[in-house]
Image (cartoon, rainbow, N blue to C red):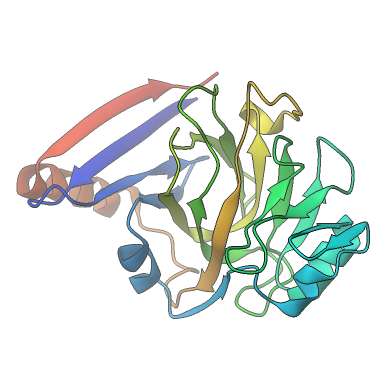
Length: 238
């Protein structure tokens, strides 16, 4: 499958935004700046994992660290459904009380589902973003395998360093993201994947139900290339 991706850099060189296609018609945008990402959403929820429910793990519970089952983790806010796909029912909340964050065993793959949230519908949400807390440069890294509202999917390789924001928006909504190996592959190998996240943000957009026509989308890409200094890449996906 051919995937057309464009990275548009601002004149200040501070923010990179990628625009592309998933499946046959779906447009998506990738963000490395939280403020720009959140400006695309009309209604959003930010989970910083400080809700008191996260400090009462049903699998393990001490003052600085908790472990939750999938069901318990999903029920605390009721906005995102968590499924650990590497190590079963190992939803970790370390860093309490001052700096809590989320990981699945801190080296395992996991699935986040967004089809039953107050800021979306049964097809998903318009945008998902988060702060990467645990990916290290000496580790192979983590793929975000995104399933969109029309059933199409795509792989995105997450930045291999800590303290990095990553976000994605899509006109046809985002149903789920699996964090692990390419194409949704599961993993518990600390030398392959070591990722945690914080400030998980999901939201809706009034434009989420409309898909740009191919001609208008290509015009947008052309304009971006001329106006902002563009790196245009063509990538072959198996």
